[in-house]
Length: 93
Ligand SMILES: Cc1cc2nc3c(=O)[nH]c(=O)nc-3n(C[C@H](O)[C@H](O)[C@H](O)COP(=O)(O)OP(=O)(O)OC[C@H]3O[C@@H](n4cnc5c(N)ncnc54)[C@H](O)[C@@H]3O)c2cc1C
Image (cartoon, rainbow, N blue to C red; front, side):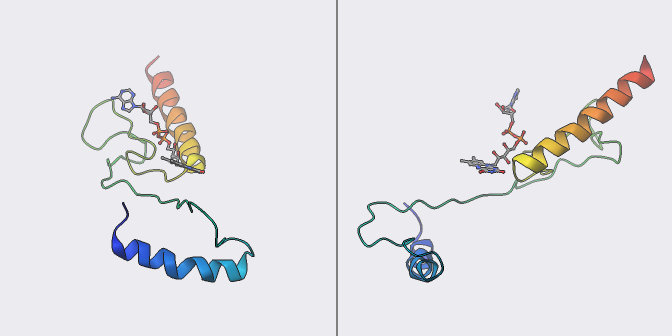
């Protein structure tokens, strides 16, 4: 169940959206889905070399660590972190 203020906002928004996208607010619709997103409530801080500031060997990455908010930024962050890990391994090899 959504909070009242959200339901109120949806009630106001649907007719407005229907003016821009004809048919968006169908009078006989049984269900209108809403997509919501949340952000990570915390950031696992890391240094310029992608290592954690305070946990040895940890490379915080992606959405859970607050370095991404969608599949693209998560993918890019993963590549950058993978490169940092590879560089670190090559340096110690
Ligand atoms: C319903 C929904 C719809 C979405 N739609 C879109 C969309 O249309 N477009 C878009 O760009 N983004 C969308 N997103 C957001 C997108 O899915 C995420 O931003 C993205 O997947 C984050 O990638 P990630 O690799 O950082 O984290 P995740 O994809 O969450 O990967 C984290 C992985 O770590 C694993 N894991 C967790 N804890 C542990 C542990 N202790 N040990 C081992 N493994 C562990 C998990 O099982 C998981 O596989 C959507 C998200 C949701 C929930």
